[in-house]
Amino acid sequence: MSRYLTVNRIEFAVTYLCNAKCKHCYSIQNKKSFPKHIDKPLAVKIVKKVGEKYSPESIMTFGGEPLLFPEIVCAIHKEAMDVGIPSREIITNGYWSKNAKKIIEIAKNLAESGVNEIYVSVDAFHQEQISLDIVRKTIESCLQEGIENIVWDPCWVVSEDNDNQYNQKTKSILKELEDLPVRKSEGNVMEPDGLALINLKEFLPPKEKIPAGKCGSMPYTDPLDSVKGICVEPDGEIAVCNDFYIGNAFKSDIINLIEDYDPFKIPEMRAIIENGMEGLINWARTKGVEPDPEGYYSICQMCIDIRKRVSKTLK
Image 1 (cartoon, one colour):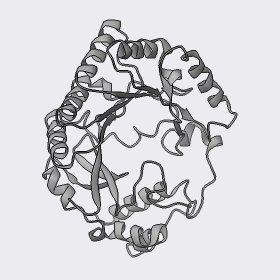
Image 2 (cartoon, one colour):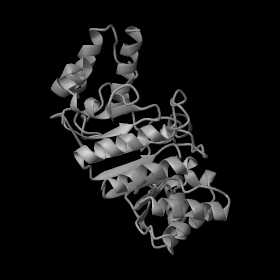
Image 3 (cartoon, helix red, strand yellow):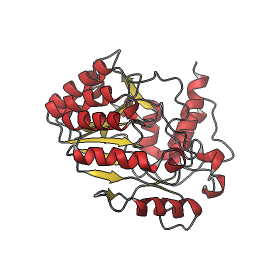
Image 4 (tube, one colour):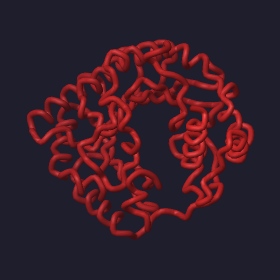
């Protein structure tokens, strides 16, 4: 195994298609170039190979809305169960079908495939798009099939404690669901990205020339020289961080990609590891690229923007 990459977790972006268009969404932005969904045989092969070699602790399927393709989700989790990955999770908006029988069928198949934790996005944004009655039916079906570890996973604006109309609505929605035996997570805070940049500007933080923070301290990130998991995109690309790809599992064996990972051989990664965002800026300047003079909301936004603009100069 690479000394810089320990596969404790596998994530699959099953699809970036979604049956809702929430006004805060960032996950489906700039994803139109991806295929409709991940290739099922490839996904199963990745789970089998990585699961048998590295014994990861958890696996997650998400999207978009992953349950637009329940047969792929079930195949991934069935293989994960077979190779002994203990935590098998899904993030979903709970809108699997309008048909009650279909919802029950999907819940049954998920339970049989070994899914044992479901995070359900419920908040002011999702419920503008998705009936709470459908979400309730979905969760009741999962509970009846024996999937008991279900979690409400709301998105908060600014913070959970901020008293704004969206948070007020989210708290009202969660109160309506209190009768169900489902716990609430801390949720997440709206990202200054995607549709939020258009629809929710008044709630965004001020931009900074060089935002504070470093890899590993930001949500959903690890230090690039101490990565704990991989994310598989719908086209087979393997990411160790947002848009930081180390190869494609269609073109190269997944085990080789993992074992060959060395961030110090990738100039922009090395620059970040050694000198943070200042290092990335200095590296980009050698390619003729300067940071956006308007600044950035976060180091992640800065990192993605600078690397994308450098890649364009190299084409």
